[in-house]
Image (cartoon, rainbow, N blue to C red; front, side, top):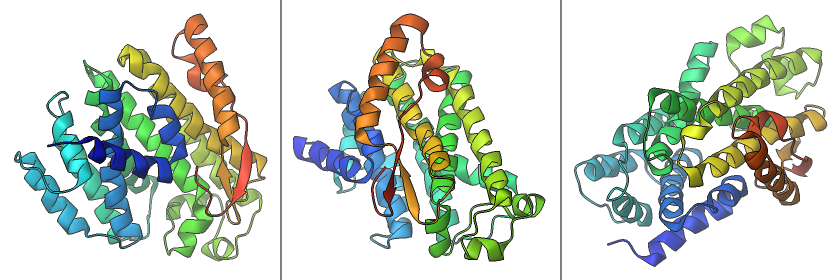
Length: 301
C-alpha cells in the first residue's frame, strides 16, 4: 500500500537531483504530482544504476516485468506507481523503452551517426514523455504522443550539449562521428577541450535540432489537461534556457556547467503566466526568454 512516506521519498529524489523538474512539476495537483515524482524516481534509479553503479539495471528490469504483471516490488516508487495506475493508464511499454536506452549506456559504443543519436535520445528521454503522458493528459492523441516524445528528446539533446566535457571524462562521446567529420572537429580536439569555430558550428547544429523539437512539441501543449499545460510549458522553457546559458558562457561546456538559476526560473514562471492569458500555449517556448547564469561542475540544473 502506498504511503505518504513513499510519496515523500520520491519527492526527495527529484528535489535533490533536478531542481528544474521539481520547480515545474510541484505545481501540479497532488495526485498528478506524486505520480510524476514516482516516474522520476524510477528513471533516476535506472540512470544511477548505470552511471554510478548504485544498483542493478537487470534487477530493475525484472522488477518492471513483475510490476507489469500486477505485482508491487518493495521500493517506494513502485508502491507509488501502483497507486498511480489505479487512476492513470500507465504505459509499461514506455518504461521498457527507457530501460532499453539505459542498456545502450551500460554497453556504450561510439555513436556513428545522427540516426543512432536520436534513437538513443528517444529511448532514454522521449520515453519519459510517454511515461508521463497518461498522468498529464486525460485524453491522448497521436499528435500529443509525438509532442511528448519530441519534448523528451529535445531535453536529452540539451543534456548532451550541456555535458559534453563531463561525458567525455566518463568515457562517453554522444556527438556522432559523421557530424564531427562533417564539421571538421576531431576527437583529439575534443580530448583537449578545444573551443574553436568548428566546435561552435557543431554544437549549434544540434542545438538548432533541439530547439526545433521544442517548437514542434509546443504545438500540441494545448491538448494536455488544463492543470498540466503550464507545468509542461514551464519545464520545457526552463530546460531550453540551458542552451542560452551555454551561449552566454561562450560555449564552454568543458569547465563550466550551464545552469538556469532559481531566481530566473521564478521570473520565467511569471512571464509564462502572463502569456497564458494573452496568447495561449504556443508562445511559451518561443517568446519567453529565460535569464541565464553559470555554475561550476557539480551544481544541479
